[in-house]
Image (cartoon, rainbow, N blue to C red; front, side, top):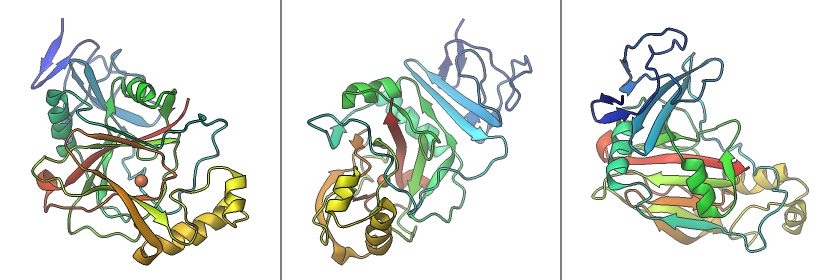
Length: 292
Ligand SMILES: [Fe+2]
């Protein structure tokens, strides 16, 4: 018999007390705005993790936070391109934009979930804050694999995968143009339509005349570098915030419920932040995938 929560439907599974996977309690606790659910519906948490979940018809949302709560998955300029993929398609795809990725109802509910999460103060390189909790969207791997035409899985470690990011106009950071450590990155825009400003921005690095970081060593050497570390140091760390070093090439405009899948080695920024509070700020759901 399905169990109905306010606005949510738990289709199956045993509901247990938050943080205690063994107690056969049927309690449902609201903790940090999230319902605590454990049971067959959700995967077993890893040691040291607690899981918080929502289940919607056709959409399962699951949050994972470490037992000792702390900030993780924080953005940093120290990221390097992931190890060169063993094989890229002969006609590699760099950018995919999917509108109305979720049903209107699920997109609104995902946004509502995101607004209830915890956004601790962070001293990251980029403006904004990641949610402490992770929210897992059921079937996401499958959907994204279908979209990119190859099998992907969440990166390991998870970095910021499945976290929300909230950025307000007043937020500041130490870095702008960057690359991510993944095989595919995904950004699902969740700001209200009337609040959306700008979008994810892409650039050409003037000195090297490139729109992305090298993926393989031969590309790296052709750009004049002897190591990926040197490349990262002399492009990202040195030029990240110097606008004169970058030519804007395109922008994926922010739009509610639009998913942007991009190759993380493209030189890019998050684009402008806006708003003065959670409800009207820049809210996105982050995805980082590796090749499966
Ligand atoms: Fe990024």
